[in-house]
Length: 406
Ligand SMILES: [Zn+2]
Image (cartoon, rainbow, N blue to C red; front, side):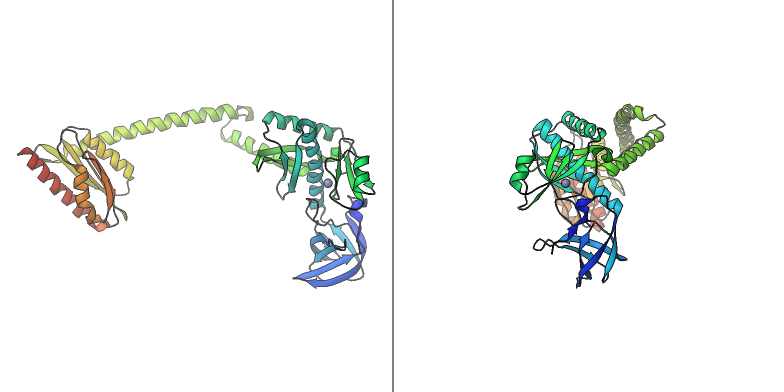
């Protein structure tokens, strides 16, 4: 038996009384059928209502497609006459988003001949999938302007019934042919939009408050548009307004000065980053000179061996290069840690193959790596071999330098 749908007669009905026709255990609750209900069941893109029925919580409401009965899933058994109360905040929010969707879909049809393929009313935002190749910010603002103009004109939202889909098509300029077989419910937004729809809608466009497009992106072969309406749009505006005020306050500025201040901060960051890099270069050069001053001299070449802990490999490599930029110098550096690294480098006026020396000592730290005759680097997994590897490298360097001198 079809349940009498009170929400079709009055979308603003918040409480009602009804008779329990059946009540049976289902899952971890009960499934109740009433003779009439103001609870909207999931359908037409609009989520179901929640609320209370005879003191029980209404958790879910669905329609039985075979019988047309509306099934209320509640958390306890019910019988006799019961009072129902809709969770009105949730329902009103759905009515606002849903009515705004009708309006926006027609706005995009009128302005850009874009058909609405589908829409989704989510808990945070609503999306409309439009048959459109591209969408510019100017077009979005034009659509927002027209939609909000119709909001401010406070046009009535009316419901019409047509006997069949054919008569509905003949009587009303519907955006899409009705998807139902029997009588068709047509929702009219003030002579602007006519849609076949069984959902709940606000009584006039003024009740939508504000419609705001938040984002749009390419999706499948069209554009997916995300928007907010009514209470959601107000809360979003409050959130953004608070955010910009807090940002401005943190910079001791007025809100209008924010874009200029951000640009200035960006430039300042770039300048500081360059300065920091230059200062680090200079520090490395000072450190390289100090290391060279204390280096052992082998056959007239200054050989620096050093291990570093807790220092980025990139920095140690740069320090080795700084040492090797001086004449007659060799750097043999290692980093301590679970994964030890080796960095070898020499000046251009020294005759040694650093790549070959590295390959000879890598097995000591169970490492891998390589390089050129000028510089080489590698990493291993045997930290306890690091000192031996550097000793071995130093011995090879000394042999090579003494041989080249002969
Ligand atoms: Zn609708």
